[in-house]
Length: 325
Image (cartoon, rainbow, N blue to C red; front, side):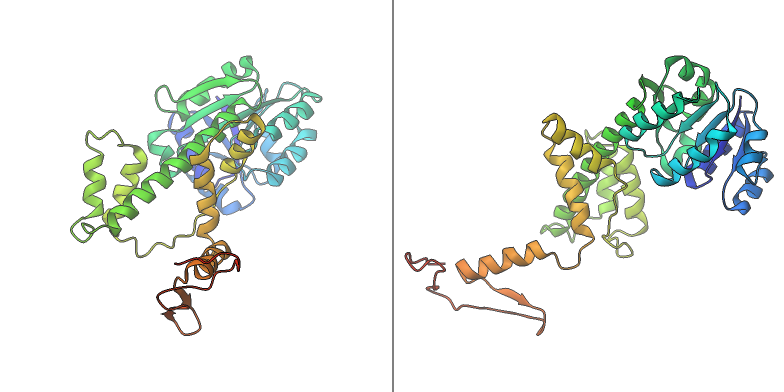
């Protein structure tokens, strides 16, 4: 099939390469012309404006967007609308909030333009392994673009999930689960490292072991095994973790539906905490422990621990009742 891809980032570029390898015709556009020129060398048809991009597509035009979710995707869709005709197809492969899909599909329907939401998982390994793809939209349009999905995905690696929004909704939950899994691995290996056996354990070897027959073996653990191979103590890694939005939306959805998801919620909050050097809530806890129990606190100005109260009886905050720490 012939289709166009807008956005040649890490995933968009590799998706275009995978399609070209299976003899699809791919028109590419990116704001950075060097990325377009690079893909032309690999067999793609280059375009250096949206107008040129649309002109080089056959009817009905199939346009796959691989752009950052949100405003950039909205702006691009708005610029495409006057260039497209009734029956053309826009596929959004970003990590989009499913409620944005509902809004966009309704708007595009007024112009007769079909909208497909595609939740895509595979990351930088997708070129080799394929992209697990979750599709929402009209069933007949899904069937029309199915040859593209077969090329992009591994065997049994794509699914029609339902009407507009369903693809990105399933991907949203997928990413929420991913957060929880990564947090569980992180906590487990932290405890291994902190134990009395930590000095004997090579964490790469543990991850390698668990990937052979263990019930917790997984692709994520394989990636972690590779990370430990390069740096068993992860000394070159800073523990600062961003979130791309899906787990936030997952937690919001759980609140709306009254569904308890404590593990996913906590994994999201841990990411927030990873970005703070001196967490105020931890200061509050330390101050309270000092006040009720005379526990030592860390004095940053002197870079030493000092005991605020000596051993023995501590003057309580509540004057009506004595408390011994």
